[in-house]
Image (cartoon, rainbow, N blue to C red; front, side, top):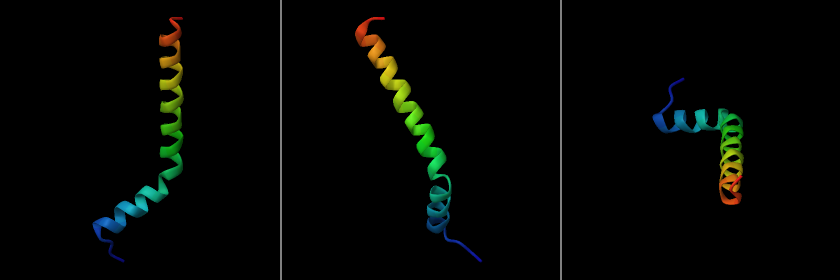
Length: 42
């Protein structure tokens, strides 16, 4: 079974999608809370 580079990238991205989304959501929440704290000045 041989994969082309494109197939490999797509299969890898699908496999790691949930983990990547969890990390992305963590970064978004952390950025929002830090930005909010800076805007409020606390």
